[in-house]
Length: 253
Picture 1 (cartoon, helix red, strand yellow):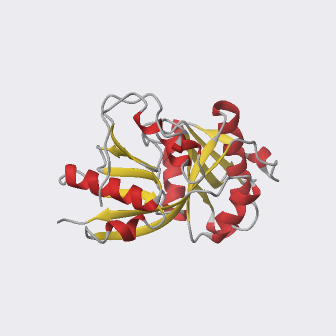
Picture 2 (cartoon, rainbow, N blue to C red):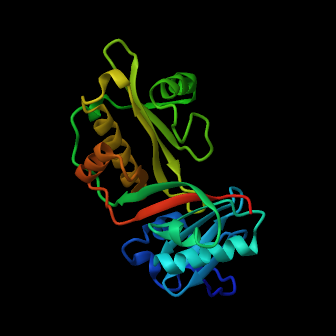
Picture 3 (cartoon, rainbow, N blue to C red):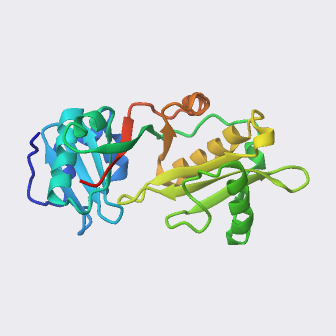
């Protein structure tokens, strides 16, 4: 597979208008239009990719064949740095024809420009500060051990939570940021396992979405593709579902 590269320019990822097409919201929201001086990127007809060099992660959008070609180009150019990638659904199969691929996970990158309908219980949501970090971490470790973002994580602008009548935390969540662009990203929404099904997660998610939309004009999040309850919730809150993605690791070669 071959990919065409271009000389670095301040808007190299955005020359095709690809970010406005369905399925390319990750480029629209995830990559800064003002090109960071250290960003390495590639473009091809119908695809674009950029490298998070710190993580060794290649992000790609566009047509799967072209996107996979850019992932392969990145891996060839930086074989000791590129360890993982995210691309449109099907990219993993195409890359695996040439490189060993493991830990494949299907995601949906979701986004909204609109405030959601008000959910029952939103009035119970309160902001949490640094003094609550130990409590938040203990809550996440108990009720969402695989949480992606923890208290004190870089890029987090806000933690919020819901408490019961006794003052005990029963739900929490954060607004973090997408690397490169700094766009708002909802993360680590968790509910007390004993109180699920009572609308706490919906109230917290709606509140965080409203907060982000009012301050930034939009909100984004990642959803596991096979999480049906989350899918129903995000549909109800108005999150777009146009960006099926896949993430995978490239093993030693």
